[in-house]
Length: 311
Ligand SMILES: [Zn+2]
Image (cartoon, rainbow, N blue to C red; front, top):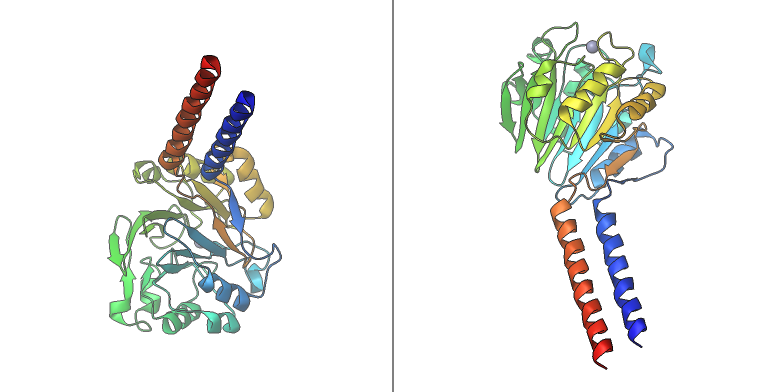
């Protein structure tokens, strides 16, 4: 009987321990299959993904079309518990996808190159979603006459703007275009970085906020982004989760080999909604549960032993 009680106590301890351990594992889950669904279905599913505080979902807009077919874009949609945004959609949204688009809180454009920005698509997304639009200085004149003044914001490196509960800081980008920027976006307690197709810049070392999710460009066809620059971005920002974008899949996987032990790499799939789990590791809570369970089990173990001895 005594040893049975010991076994029960140890089994409970092991279970609680495993449970606590499981909650701190930065695993990720993905909704939908790994096969790319049609964009319109994917966008509808993305909008219907329910998230709790501290969760984030993203959907990569896939590879370029037309002359850029086969080159991975930096276009993404990102959603937290209360907010939904789109970054660098270029011309990657076919009209049926536009029909599925629901209200957005913000549209962000990093620079004027065609694989990041398309004026007609941006205007169409803005009209459909009513969202304000933050753009680099090189993009601003192209939208000035097409988007209402109170909906269009020019973002210069160093600028910080808050709109619809989202705070965005523009960071100097290293790229041959007109005052290109990268973005650090804070919404619902999460910080999200988008590296456009920039090379590494020292300013990234000065970001003192935690970064929960980073979209990092790995290379082709950018003249500035590269695997080494992407690895430097990860080392400067120390994101919990990193999503490689803007480059071939071999380079995305190569980044995982380089920095996979410093961040959780999630390789994107075109139009697949991904929800990195436990993006904010709940160390204090999990640790509390673990220590509490351990102490309780130790006490019961000693009591059982004492009872055993006194009998
Ligand atoms: Zn570019």
